Amino acid sequence: MRTGVTLIDITRAADQLLAEGERPTVDGVRKVLGTGSPATVNNLLKEYYQALPTRLNLPAAIATAAAELYQKIRETAQGEVQEQQEIFQRDLAGDREKLTADRNTFEADRASLLQQVATLTSEKQGQQEQISALQTKVSGLEKTLGEQAERAATAESRANSATEERERAAIKHAADVVHLREQAEGNERHLLARIEDQKTQNKRITGEREKESAAAQSRVATLETSVSEVTKSLAATRGELATAQRDLVREREQRTEVETALLNAQERLAKDQQGWIVERERMKNEVLLEQSAIKNLRQERDDAIREAARQEGKTLALLGQLEELRGELVAQRNSLDRVAKTP
Image 1 (spheres, rainbow, N blue to C red):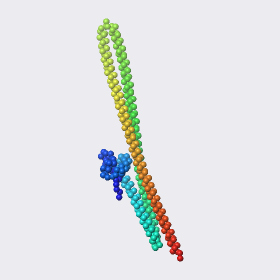
Image 2 (image 1 turned 45 degrees about the vertical axis):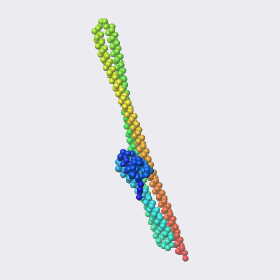
Image 3 (image 1 turned 30 degrees about the vertical axis):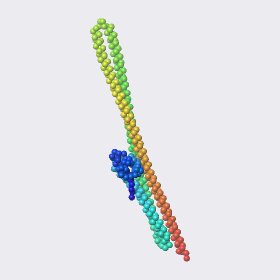
Image 4 (image 1 turned 90 degrees about the vertical axis):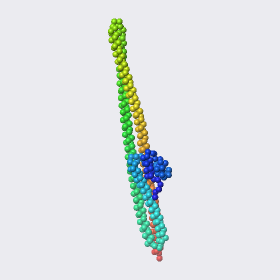
């Protein structure tokens, strides 16, 4: 009967800790289970983390059931192989005892010896059937491992698609930033053009004012009334100049706002790029974990195949020993026949 902590126990305890908002650790899992050595819990917890990327795409109940099913299949296969080995060893020991007894009593009961040979032949056929059953079980395990590899490849494809989608979003966002930058540069050129126009207008107004002042001075003695009009015109000009200066201040403020918005957009772009880099690294780590899980599954499959081949080799060796014993029995029977025929 199986004892000790299993991967199913570790999976349930770790899922419980995650549901409570805690990170599954060796001490935390041992506290939930109330048993388990640190070394055993640590090794099983590594297997849990290796299988976690695949389980994240499933609801917790389904993922736990899948882990339980996999563990049960694995334990059942191992138990059946061990049970078959034990049965085989017991049968072999019984056969050897029977052969020894038959060899000691062969001269007294020839008919019994022939019956024992027929029994050995029947048992040989049963062992061959057991070998075929073991091969069928190994084929089933290989099929299961292949399905798990296909699911891992599908998860990797989804991860690559997500990465490509993020890269396309990054390219679009960069294009938008370039567009905003070009728009800001266009606004800046427009403001500079308006400033140049304002400077030209100020120069024109200043020139006109100087001309009017010169004319007023030359006619100051005779055109006092014209001086009053020129003064009024100058006041109006000064009002226009003040208005132009206020417009210039507003345009400078607008330019400052545009520059501030551009800097904010650049900062947001830098933050978004940093987030994309972190997300891409996380996806790469998930892919690496999935590849590691696939590698472990393939290793388990290879170990199972090698174990089956080893058991098959042992079985063939035992069958060879049975054939040798059978040959010895036939030789002894022939010898007895010759002795019986000798007068």
